[in-house]
Image 1 (spheres, rainbow over the protein chains, first blue to last red):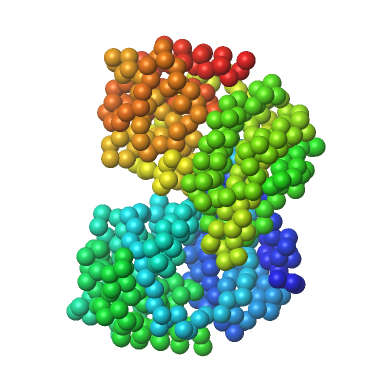
Image 2: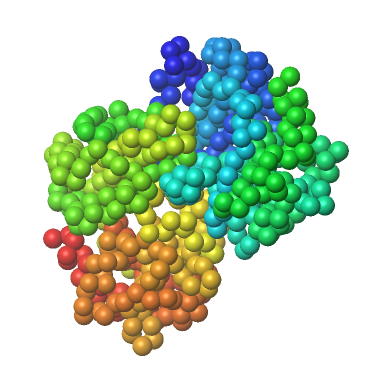
Amino acid sequence: MCNQFSVINHSIVSEKEALVHVSDLSIQRGYGIFDYFRTVNGKPVFLEAHINRFYQSAKSMHLNTSVHSEELKELIYQLISANNLPNSGIRITLTGGYSPDGYTLADPNLFITQSAFNFNKTNFAKGIKLISYEYARELPLIKTINYLQAIYLQPLIKSKNADDVIYYSNNEILECPRANIFIVTQQNELLTPANGVLKGITRNTILSFNEFGGRETNISLEQLYNAKEVFITSTTKNVLPVLAINDQPIGDGQPGVISSHIYEKLIQLKEV
Amino acid sequence: MCNQFSVINHSIVSEKEALVHVSDLSIQRGYGIFDYFRTVNGKPVFLEAHINRFYQSAKSMHLNTSVHSEELKELIYQLISANNLPNSGIRITLTGGYSPDGYTLADPNLFITQSAFNFNKTNFAKGIKLISYEYARELPLIKTINYLQAIYLQPLIKSKNADDVIYYSNNEILECPRANIFIVTQQNELLTPANGVLKGITRNTILSFNEFGGRETNISLEQLYNAKEVFITSTTKNVLPVLAINDQPIGDGQPGVISSHIYEKLIQLKEV
């Protein structure tokens, strides 16, 4: 990472200088929010949607940043220009700041970091395996930095030869730690959990594709297992077919037709 | 904070140099554990118990630090000597480290920080007010850095003119964000929640006081409201009487006799 740059608050700094004092509430109390978007051929994808959600998360968590949306966008474009990484992921993080007592909120600290990211088109065909786990995030509608449970579960996921976990609560499915989930029923309905999940930007985009008729509703574990197709969605994954859950195959164990169509449409929209 | 020192991994550094790169998993994913103990007249209080819990938390969270307990103690004593702050709080933090992909665990980073702390003996008589809130921590037995819910609730606590929150789940009380809770029943039984709570060092010490007959059990919200005395316990608070919950007075609304006896015994043990 030579000649790489980041942003701290109002300034562009060298990537090595993107340092936080240990007294920041992110390290003291895991308190912060973030958002993450991609650049494709040097252009940010769905930037407005990510910035809107970033400020919504900040407001929900009582974090009042002095960097306002126009300045934030300006800093992002400066960073893109300085780093010259056409295909990348950009993360905007806002922390609880340097609290005088390590507990009460202070002036937030803003960090913007960029790293190379090339979307891997071969992953779609491979698909993934999930395990199910009973857990609901504490503030699911807010994109907080808390992934404690997700990272804690990594050894379990690995031991089950799975790729990720699907959380559920009261017999209803919710979300993966870093992705939303959709099912296609035997009646070809496209459904995604309505409540208790982060409203992903890719999820929102898919729901806006009128020809697939996607809608939000409650989905039981049983509906998940009996689905014709299951796939997860995120900014980096786009659409990834779920071929098995807890070693039980989904549908015929191959990426499905509707998943493929949505994937193609999404790629076309994002990568052009 | 002039001439103040901290520890990063194996080294003593100036307090200003206690910096973390933004790529650390504590900032990326809220992933880390800590412990906190006090020094009184230059001597650490219950050091062994805190160090044991620190390593238990680390192990539970799959964090393998290269700093082992004898070196950790040596670093703590070096820090105490360098800072010359006889009455203080010392925090040992272990983070998920510099993850190459911002998600998988890496080599942990260790930070030890010290700040002045003088116990305020007048707080006991004033007591505190709590509000109740339905919430259970995700990994309650581990002292993780996740206090997202607690800090998120601060404006609510303030709006209710309360001092802190008592979490409950399935009608059973659990813990405050940074303290355990005890009740004294009308039959003079001393009880503290058995399950789903962090096993505080002060809590353990009080349970070891044979003359009060304290024991762990499930405690309902009703038992809490009908208690003769209620108090919370922590390393910095020792014993703090709870005089009201959700504006409902507890007992006669004054610090109780058993609370006072336990407080005195604890102070004697810790402050001498």
